[in-house]
Length: 249
Image (tube, rainbow, N blue to C red):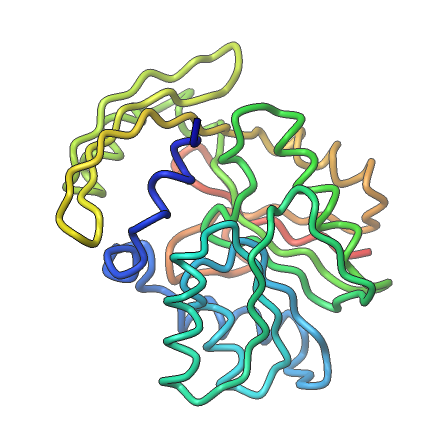
């Protein structure tokens, strides 16, 4: 049986690119460039690259980028967009929990919940984080965003999701597991209505810090995260639906 994220991304690439949360790519890549001091000689790995919006924009700016994703449908769209942009990005279909590269990368990305926090168990999510960490070169950085568990302690996730996304959402947040169990109705690229039973994990900052320390990161910074407005001076608070994590080996 397919998990909800497998079902969703089996035929959602074109609609995905029209989602409001994909519109901040240019600023987000601007920020990523500052994190590597505009060094065009580094290698970048984009985990859960989807339709390649960050990978392709980085490649346009002269960076060497490799992208992986679980969905063949999303990767086909990414390859099509890369051809249209006339850039070379290496795209591979792989599960974020068990891919392997012999080389290390100076920057590893997991943006827009690129796999991490979507898994149905904490062990699966940690496997993604562990695998991502293993790809980071000495002195390199892991940059990702994830759902902020401080938000649902003070706000309604249901109200927020329905205000941000016009698709139907109905969910319940489990405080014991920090998981949002929800039902979403979404239209795929062929106009077919899908009803997805979703299950996403929210994290408190201390959990992220603990896991990254276990994975031998020397520096761990966590900030509030807004779409198309990544920055280091945004202090994380209870109004941030997501947090931005920057960890360095």
